[in-house]
Image 1 (cartoon, rainbow, N blue to C red):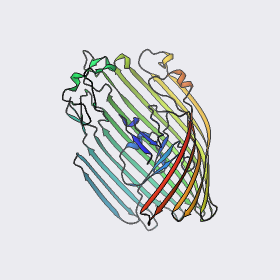
Image 2: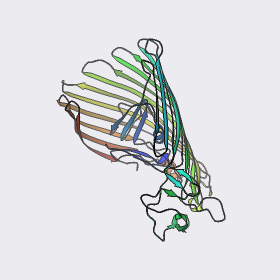
Image 3: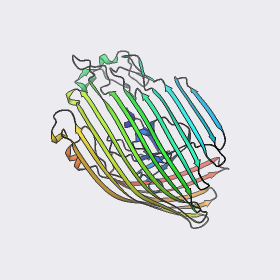
Image 4: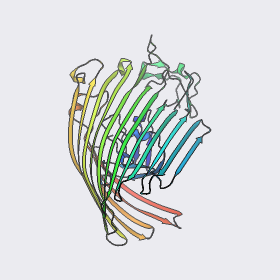
Length: 476
């Protein structure tokens, strides 16, 4: 409940919302309100979350501002994805899925220990091929399809009784022709007004607009290609009453798309070029380092103290045309450096009453380089390269109380503050003024109260939550 995924015409425009809050932005400088974390590492761009998932142990959804348990700050919530780790005995499995609407998927895994000290490995791979559910009558191809494959390897090395290393490497590749929209309703006099006022009637041959319409006529099939890879090294040292953890990660995400923006077979007069098409490549890279000191004792006080650093760079090249009214061509690069320290303390006042408090102090530096490549090439519209940089510090916190009314009935209340840093509005309308004045940081105050309960030997679960969040400078 309260988790919504809105799918756009390409993965970069798809958005995760929690309690109605998400970031639907084209800009490569915008941070998502809902953070996606995979195996303790935050993704650079939210579009990375829409790659094929495989060998999943669990998915956790944390609502509201988060910043005292994870390295990277999250303004509206976190989707935390944990993949399966090495097993303590030899295991292997294969799963084959075949559906009546022409989807084939195969997944396989192999895991085993080596030695008798807790070391082991896990290897999994998948391949998926889904035929599309929309037909392009122009060339007979199926659209809204998906073809993907991926592989992930994990190795646990128990070097001593107190020191453990986990190494993770993964790679995935996804190709799609979509996502496309179909005609639901078209009036008899409808025109393709945005592309010169051409009549739509010739574009409807073989198409019956309506809820059951799965046909289109495109001169260019939409296409997207995603490649994602990451390397993670996690070291854990048992100090007795606490555990020290270091998580180092590097990730590389490449994405390229092209789409028929006018959604017709229409070509420019006397040309084989579509009326309006757009697309181009993205490339995001990030290195991050996180340190955590987590208590392991059984006393009334438990704690987590952490430090975080991340440096990311995302580049994008964009082309749209050829109609002059839509013409755009530019290159851009957006950078982000994040530094943060965070702490959370949990204290058991009595056997039935617990309180927790958290604090986060962070700083972000952002920068942008934007070059317009289509005429007129003037300083006023960044035909001469525009650059900008900015930095800002922020402190957020959280306080909560939990009261057990019975063994499986708990009342709770939370108060927290949220923050999402500044960003540049990197799009075709970028100007020197936008390079000098980034979009203001988003801040929020969140309040929550509720009850969690289970009855009849856990066969019945009843949860009720009320929440209210005030946003300032909401990045819409």
